Image (tube, rainbow over all chains, first blue to last red):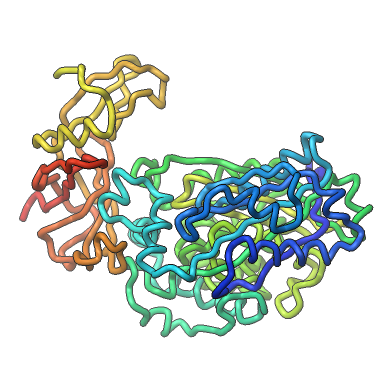
Length: 391
Length: 135
């Protein structure tokens, strides 16, 4: 492919992430779709959009299955082909990949790709249980291993193997809360000092409350067009030039390593090769910081630093706004929030804003190439995408 | 060892309820599967034989769960870890009868079969856990 655009983003929309009492997923999603339609006046949604791919994880939250067609209906798109993708927290990263398949195949010139989740009306115990469903039932859930627990197992292994400290892990939270304080759509928009992160209660040792992403409601979407047609709809398209998706065993315990996500490495390799770039050419990234330790693993798996050096990278400030490779300028899952099905396309939304110069106070200067990485569960799914500004 | 039982997770737990820790070995390529599975992920063979495992191993990593789903809330805080068995296979589980201060990566553990009571309803599985090999 050699860096040739696969598909181009012509518009994007996202609700504020947070607590949306009284709204259902369909109502949340219609708000995100509306923003995307309004941003792109040259698009006639009913006429132009031929297919929809939706990431949504759980029926349990709202006692509502068959959400693909439901969301198309409430976005005013009834009649088009809708596909729902489910890959836990990676659901809409996979939807994005599916949208690219559709555009590249020539079956659809314009598609809408999005995701949604409504979670805050449930108790923490219920959400803990629903999220755990994305892990292995007979050997992980059945024996009391929670989702924070799985990442805590990886954190402990990383600390033991490479000497990564609880302080370094906590610095990811401090950085992402700072970024979140600059994002008016973030769930939490205030800075959190390291001492508060370290003093927060344990959820699954060594991970504490402030090491965990937020339980959040929200929806996001982007509109993809065949690259040759993008300029018909907007003067400022963002091109997707690399796409990688990979899988791994559902059980964390079955994997070769506990200090790296093999699926993330495979997906990154595929995306980098397609985009024909090296990790050092990436100007900014949105990565899947469902837990702070995850962001440290991702630095290494994406090639932003050497194996085992992720803790030192965050400590150096390189991944903070103004650093050499800003990561999670949106606030990430940590501060922006993690409505699981919406996360993958919310990352793409941030990249769209950054590469069209619309990220306001958190704008990365001269950003040309961006990367998003969305993970399902403890790493049984990974999707990596690479974006380039239109030149 | 009899190979007439199906190579399923349910059968794994049935064996466990009779104090046996069993894995499935592929007859064609020799790969050992824990848990057993009906299709070899290495060579796609469907022929296996049961092999007993010692239940002894080393702790690869662990965590202490403080926030648990409703079903486990009464047990918090509790320790869970991933154990690498002598045979090289890995299995997760709770770690019991060791104070949390004494748990460390690399320590030797052994599987305890617990009560071995299989529930009547699905899932008909029982809970094993790990204890220290050198208490």
